Picture 1: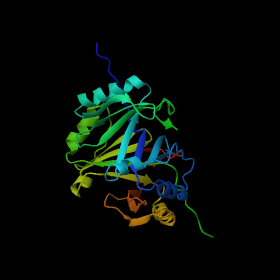
Picture 2: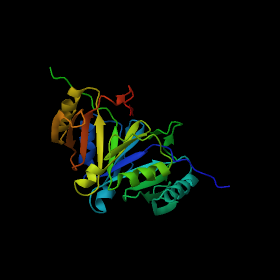
Picture 3: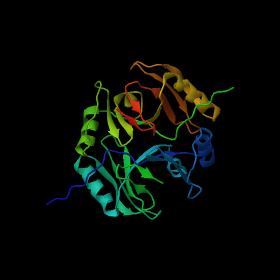
Picture 4: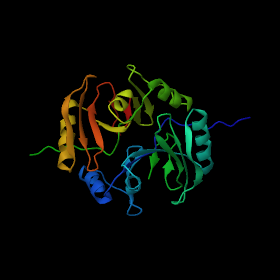
Amino acid sequence: MVETVVVEQRISLITLGVSDLRRARSFYEALGWAGAQQPDDEVCFFQAGGMVFGLWTGLAGHGAPGIELAYNVRSPKEVSEVLAEAERAGGSIVRKAAIADWGGTSGSFADPDGYVWEVAHNAGWAIADDGSIRI
Amino acid sequence: MVETVVVEQRISLITLGVSDLRRARSFYEALGWAGAQQPDDEVCFFQAGGMVFGLWTGLAGHGAPGIELAYNVRSPKEVSEVLAEAERAGGSIVRKAAIADWGGTSGSFADPDGYVWEVAHNAGWAIADDGSIRI
């Protein structure tokens, strides 16, 4: 019997590739956004409603600025399950599930237009029953 | 006395520019996403947690595919107030508040890296006290 994973109807994280993290973070703070978590000098995260909004120099550093979407899951093994489900649905796997340098489990798939979704398990970020995520 | 508008810490809508709406919608439906609202043959919207996920041929049609973020507000006059607040914070106004062809009020600003946020009032989409939005 094939076990089916449910891909919940939600987005966990949107990350903007920025060229100057301090400038980018300052803009959103000047808008009134607060409580950013900045684990290093490359990335910071704001809680944004039930999801997370990230600013990352790593995206801009690898070429043109861009936006990445992520779908976070509740267990490491769910990463590869969601990737398989995306492939079955007609997407393509970009990166297989693997341990990421930040310690979690991560992989990615592309949708038919080429938009890349990271699928990740981050033990430090809690996902509520309703799918909302808290940093 | 200057009235200050609060820019809540949330994102209302993420829209992906797609080249083939039927193909794009079918992929997310094959993932298990349901209940899409498709007002015409150019755009469809999925509820995604407390936000909205859109697929739109209009973005791709105007050049390279891309992703747009939107922040929805609770009244038409709040659109220009949020735009002014973004400008004060160091962003630039891309489109002043105006009545949109879909009937609501809309404008947009760019953040310091050039990412464009639409600021919109759509009377048909309810915004809850916690900032979540329902189509």
